[in-house]
Length: 385
Image 1 (spheres, one colour):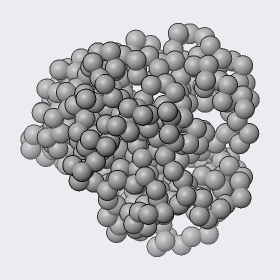
Image 2 (tube, helix red, strand yellow):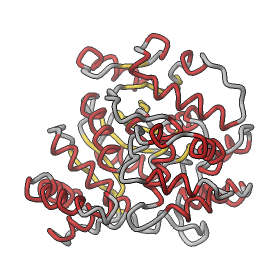
Image 3 (cartoon, helix red, strand yellow):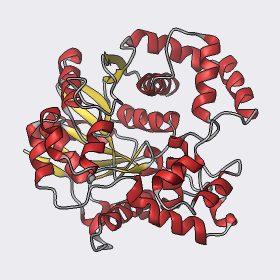
C-alpha cells in the first residue's frame, strides 16, 4: 500500500484543509493517508481551540486513515524542531510521500533549497547571524537564507515550514517524495468573506467571539455540527494566561532559567510583563524584533508545561485514531517500527509520555473540567470503522 503523510493541526479543520487532504490522496495516488497532528498544544504556542480527541475525529471523517500525535515536546517548538520530529515519525511509518501546502507550490524548489540549507557554508553563516543576538531564530534563518538565494520567499509561514520539512527529509535521508499544494489566498487573513477558503486564524477569532454561524460555509458539515454540540469552553492563549501569570510572578529566576527556550534573559522581560492584566497586553509588552510573538507564546507554554533543558525527550508514535484500512496498514509495518508505538498510554513507559500526560492534564484544567489524574492513561485510539 502506498502511504502519503500530511502534517496538520486542524485548529479547527476547515474547507481548505479538506481540499488539501483530497488533493494529497489524488496527486500522490495514496492508498493510505497518515496525519501527524499536534495534540493539546499547538506550534504557535497556545492550547488548541478544541480537544485533540475531537480534532482526531474530524481528521478521520475528512479522510485520514491513521492519526498520530506529534509529542508535545516537539509540537510547541520553532519550525525546524517541529518539522524534524514530524518527518522522523513519517519516516518510521514507511511513508512514501509528503504532501504540504505552501505559498510557493513548487516541490522541486523546496528540494533544491533544502540541499543548500543543509550545506556547512549555510550553517556557518547562520551561526554567525545568531551570535549577533539581534534577531530571533526565525528572522536570522530568513535573513541568512535570503543572502544565499531569492528563489523562495521564506518570510511566508508555510514556505518556511515546507523548507524545514524538505530539510529534515534531506538530513534524515527519509526518502519522502515531496509534493506541495500552492495556496492561492491569504490563509492568515482575519476576514472570512474575502476568500473561498477562510484561514484557521479567522475561524478561531469568530469562534472565540461566540459567532459560530459566521463560519458555517467555511467548514465541513461534520465540523460545524460537532461545534454546535461542543459543551466545553473553547481555548486560546488567554485561557492559559492566569496560570502563566502566577508562575512568572511567583517563581524565582533560577526556576525559570532551567526551562527550555528561556535564554538570553527573556525571563526578565516575561516577568515584568506578567503585571499586565490581559494576555493581549502581555504579548504586546514582550514582543520585540528579537522576541517574536510566536517565540514568546511558545516559551510561555514551555514554562507552564515545565519543559526542562536537561531533559532528552524521545520521539514516539502515539496513535490517536485509525480507520479499518489504516489498521491493516499499521499491522503490515508494525514489526519494522524503530520508534516506540503507544496505543494505550497506561502500558507505555511513563518517562516516555510524561510531557504528553502533563499537557493533557493542563488542557483539561484549562477547560474547567475536574482533573481526573488517570484519564490520559486510559485513553484508547479512536476507531473509525
